[in-house]
Image (cartoon, rainbow, N blue to C red):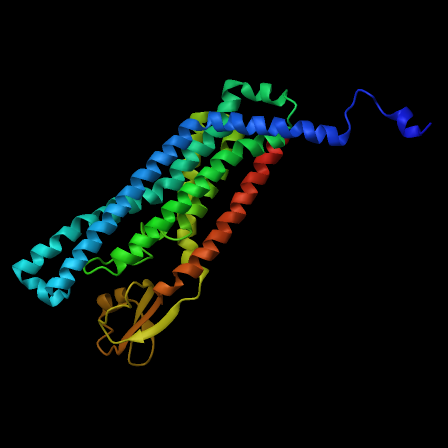
Length: 333
């Protein structure tokens, strides 16, 4: 008789049998997670539908107004002095204001809300209610349990923010930047976080950070407040370092010349006759700039938006992975 037969515990299932048994358990855990996340999923869906409807309304109004202006010869700014052209132009002001003053700040705040209201309570509530002890007594390992708990909100946040970012970028590029009246450079405070990859990367980072903070504090309200504060602090640090994510363009332009369209001006100085550069404060205070020959500009053109966002997304993904790794190690204990 083989020694394997003698030493095998007949009550212990084979590895293949254990894997087959774990599959329905994981499916059941995913179903339970889906049931627990119903309210958050419906809330995300409702917000996405409302924001998408607003963006479509902005696009329809702007597209219709631009068509009317082109047909009547009122598209150029030189024609806006007439009362008729000004009346035809006025309907575009409201959607532009709504996009720049309402939707952009709201989308900028979305990652903070996701981290505070979805990420932070995910594990903090389990600890606060004591249900974490019951979960650890189940046959599914804590790591698999956390993976299932993160899968549903993670995929929902990824899908919702991806659709929202695509719609915001489309309306901004089609109707705002190339519109007849609006001026909205991509590097402004509320514009940059609402375009491209920024909403997706920041939302995933905020979700992972909230999960880690909730695991550490084990209290829901403190975890929510701390997550919001940490997301805001991280946003400030990233914004401070953002100009260095891509080399700037240096140029000397005539005095009092306009900066490049849609550019992000990082620094500017007055160029004196001997070639030295001094700040505008020095010129105003000491009257040393009477012989100035031009202005030195250091700026990011609008084409730097994508490279800068790629670097920022990479940094946020690394922070997301670090936060999730720490959360998985803590829950394993």
